[in-house]
Amino acid sequence: MTAANPAIRVNVDPTNPGQFFACCGLLELADRLWAGAEGGFAENDRQFHLHCPGTLAELVRAIATAQLTPTRSDDPLATPFVIGQPFRPLSIDWWETDRTGAKDLKVWAGTMESYGIAKAMQHALDDERFCQPDLFDVGLVVMNADEPDKKKEPYYYDARRAPNAHSRDTGFSANDLGLTTTAYPAVELLCLIGLQVARPVPTKEARVYDYFTWSIPLPTNLLLAASCGALAVPGRRGYRFENWFRTGQKKHKAFRPAIPLPLRGD
Image (cartoon, one colour):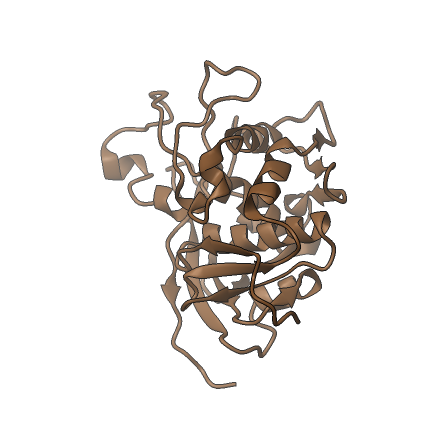
């Protein structure tokens, strides 16, 4: 564990599960760019600190320009993809099998494209606003990376999209009407990546999960254990959220805001 001052500080809402797993994705990519990177939460979970030899601007630019390669070109709706140069290769395929314990965390369905959304979110990160500690709060209408005149809706991992996402709450379906809505690209893409290496723990309630923060710098090989609360580490706090059905067909889902769990002794 690293005791030096962090090189990168990112502001976080710990009750937004998308932002929590985005931190995990950010740490994984930092380690694949600068081997040995470590990370942990601070300031009552309101910041995520990365200990690495680079800067946030360098990391974001690497993410925005990284090679993304789909593994099944004939299956745009569900194909996994590989994140390549300048990173050590990382396959993003956790929704393919129950072996990972994360298959039910897939929120997209229908005509939504796994790779296409990732590519659009990545393309949106090519903006100086994402090189700042508030990168998770940069919201915009995301356009299709291959067809810039067309919008691309996100996965719905950012919990700010869940309230009023269902047509019964608003009186109409924004998706059916083709309306443009604000997305948070850094959260959407990095959460998808984070779920490859970190995981919430299921509760007894269907589609309800717990995740846990930690307050000391940890390496990436402990991300899975730390995120599901299996490590008795200093500053551990738990949060509970629902992966909610946001349409009447019960196909599309969205991460809802989390509630803090009562503190417990270890």
